[in-house]
Length: 111
Length: 125
Image 1 (cartoon, rainbow over the protein chains, first blue to last red):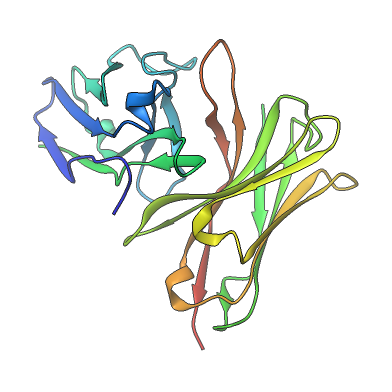
Image 2: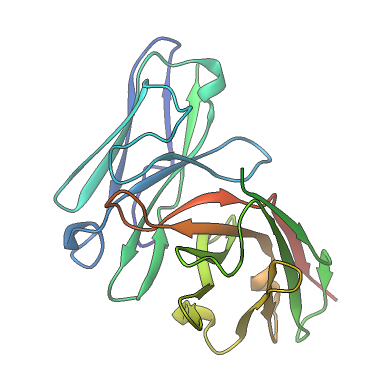
């Protein structure tokens, strides 16, 4: 049972927009800690996709965007492409656990 | 460009010690702004942060509560690398183990911006 809750799967057709939610609590996202998102392609290590709730590292397309409100955060992917098919993980800090925590991951399928 | 290269055995017997090493290039294990972390991933537990080592005038370690009694993370400044040791392993410790660099920049909280390639460690007799 992960500390941050994500839907197990989402899907969308090429060109469409999908969102992935990440729900936490008062000791992590709700306490004001930033949310970061990672993309994990099959058989590879996670790659930083969004940091500080809504910032993109250099090289990440602006089709990817992030937001945070209250105890939740969201990752939006617009203009879906086949290469976006991957697992997506959210991450934050938890003050009760005094450590970094992840969501369970969401598998994105491009139909 | 930071690169992390992992090495270590892929099979460990129950009750023995799991050991994985992560060699750093493009940065220093003694960095005053980075930390060096271990994270594992299994189908049942997802991504799980295990602990970190970092240098701020002296060496510090932080460990996850779930493994605190069994884990040691050590820096090796002579080889610019760091290592994970997990004692008394059980089949539940079977996972892909990743090393990662964590850093806090531009007013945002610590994030894992570079990852090793991962090492699948299976605990089995």
